[in-house]
Amino acid sequence: MLAPSGQQFHISSGDYAAVVTESGGALRALTHRGRPLLDGFEEDRTASGGRGQLLMPWPNRIRDGRYRFEGDSQQLALSEPSRHNASHGLVRWAAWSLVAHRPDHVTLGYRLMSQTGYPWTLDVEVGYALGADGLTVTQTATNRSDTVAPYASGAHPYLLAGAGPVDGWTVEVPAEVRMLTDAERLLPTGTEDVDGTPYDLRTPRELGDLVLNHAYGRLQRGEDGRATARLRAPEGTGVELWVDGRHQWLMLYTADDVPATARHSLAVEPMTAPPDAFNSGLDLVRLAPGERVSASWGVRSTD
Image (cartoon, rainbow, N blue to C red; front, top):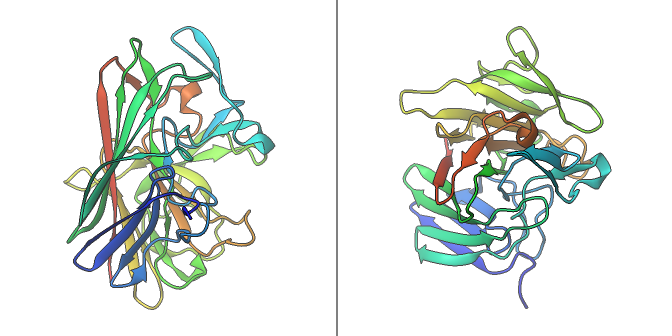
């Protein structure tokens, strides 16, 4: 019998081990010395809540699934019908093909064909590599069409600092602004500086009962150009997620609207563009014919 998420690709290096799935090229599991760093999903289950999935060629939501690009109007299928949005791209449930597999690395690829609402063909690829510094994920897209394509990427890992709930975890996110959204459809209404608000996570603080379902931007970066979110549990275990300069946003989500998994883990989602970027154009890549673009992020233990 084939697992619901298809073929399973196991990789390991030193104290780290991970499992990537054929379905969506998703990251199903990541451990350090046997401790889970991700709140993933079991082999006999389908990914729920976007767990470990790749969000390409856009992350988050597009209002009404409708946008205008290069003078043409496009209408996507509403993959989030309850909120009348197109959500999280077009590759989450596709069967990705194996490109390369070594003990510490796996690369998968998928050809996203031109279709209603997205009339461009992209070759997308993801590489997962384990090393002494944990996991590095590289997402790549190449435009195989003869016209410019709108493009952004993201991913949906749920991080585990230790035993939940997240309320007792210390959280640090080096972001100066958060995106405001409406309560019903979770679509952007503006941004605000986090300074002086309960959403300022630039200094490590206990999360408490703070409810998060917000995109954070204007990321502060180190000399290496990376921005790093840090989570730590009271027992001393911890996990970090870093993003490269292509990623301008981090989506933080405590899943309070999903009772079965609420506040068990914290989704920290790397995004190269914010919600509804196909309409706002904010941080959206205009991918020229034949052009290739890559973005990298990673997860490591701080135990």
